[in-house]
Length: 357
RNA sequence: GUCCGGUUCGUCUAGGGGUUAGGACACCGCCCUUUCACGGCGGCAACACGGGUUCAAAUCCCGUACCGGAUACCA
Image 1 (cartoon, rainbow, N blue to C red):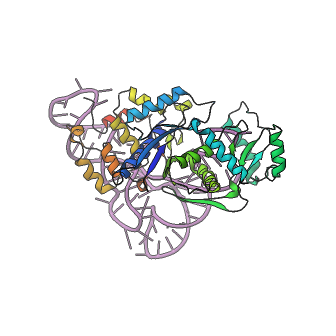
Image 2 (cartoon, protein in one colour; image 1 turned 45 degrees about the vertical axis):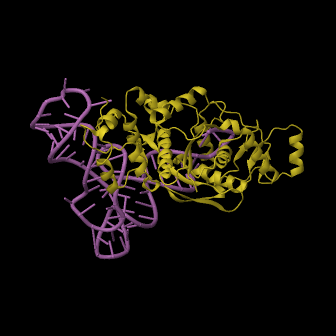
């Protein structure tokens, strides 16, 4: 089967350093596959289903970052919001087949407190005792559901997750992943305002784009179980999954724009004059390493021009990265992006021995 | 709270039953001299903790601690 991968950022900010690495790994994987199958593709999809937070400026910023890094998508860019009708159709189909149901519970008003915190607090309060299947509309009769909907009562569409069983998949990086259905809620597919939600949109688009390998951050590990449930309901075989270890801030904390500022943005490095080849190499080595033996060989026989008058170090140009890349050399522990005591400039241009002039 | 991950030099990492635990960057010293984005040589520096299995454990198993992720009509 021809390899088709996609990088799918949401345009809610600039190109994050972690996202850039995800883009890189997807790109390297596709290009490596292309070595043996010319039709292998690297695609770009902008996940702009969050109407409230997505901006065109952010999309532009992401595109700029991609361009700087040299990752050109092989097909036209897909904007997820353009596929909303298809997502809705899929949700309705599941509804008609009884695999999803209408939830007439009034939408909760957002609190002013941090959403994340609210959710965490609530989950803590409920402890492990929460019953994911306690929705009173779950077993509502089809007629009554139809009637209430016809009367204009607002509803969200939720996936009807089976009571017993578990989802499981073999992650290319993390190995066998299993999760009991009791741990997974009846996730919302379509909001009461008719907008499709992330998990549904991702699955529908990945199916349509014929994605064969989903390579993304480890923070999507639990989403994967939800998505597999959707694939199953839709009756489609799911793609392979490979989750990447996170890139954290010094101290092992999450790298965030709010706390760490511009340091997490790709444009910061571009504007500071770093070379793409250096930054790519730096990014590639966060979470992945080449096979020891071929590493030495490749590096010494690499691009002479770049290394003229410079020591070898651990630098690989794009072609070398592509040649050496493989999913099974990605490890599972998070990397710390140490920008405090270890100036990124040194981590890239200087330490890898490539000057600008 | 619950579920899922993770833990090798300061940092990125290799190694995954028997190694002087290797490399890169940083740092220190010397040399060269292109004197803060060149180069060479050398040095410092790590297997989270506690049990177990084994002739032998950084490597396998269990537990603890700590860190992270997820737990949303966000993505």
